[in-house]
Image (cartoon, rainbow, N blue to C red; front, side, top):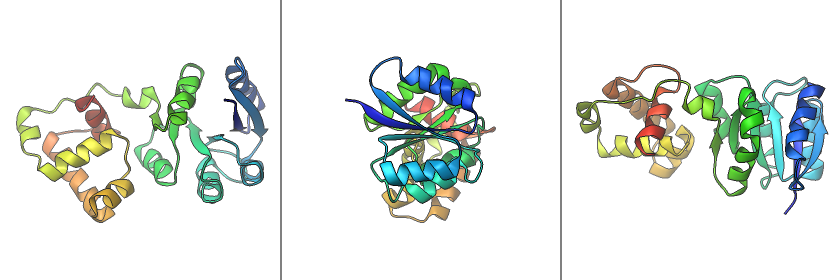
Length: 205
């Protein structure tokens, strides 16, 4: 199967580089967009199978493009491509319907794996994010102190579920999920950017 794939980035050299990676085989047929406005036009008019969106672009960044076009093109698989390893941006991207969050520094080595994963119905998070800090290890007392609900939330975080998705799945409010996450981090003594995600992925792997 050949996937129509939008590459939206305002740097032409970077677009050419991504296109070169994708067109080594015959699996991806690439379309290019130079800014967010052009990306929205392509998505709404052509509904590509995959849309790779730079987080920062003229006229509209990747998250804005995602927010405005995902409801109109629900079958498109969205990949946010960025230099920013930020837990709030990651959660926002997945809340808006992204299927992958990939750091630009990892694109050359991970892009094909990323697209293969999302085409199989999985979510993908850049390896550098999961490995950005030493693997978080909590002591046995910390794990034992977690309630069954908190353990369930840790497992869902490890599956890259957002607070919104966890709230819907557990039939609780987003604020309650966030409170649980704060309590979990405190009980486990976790610190640092994406610490709970690092721990959850590691603990349940």
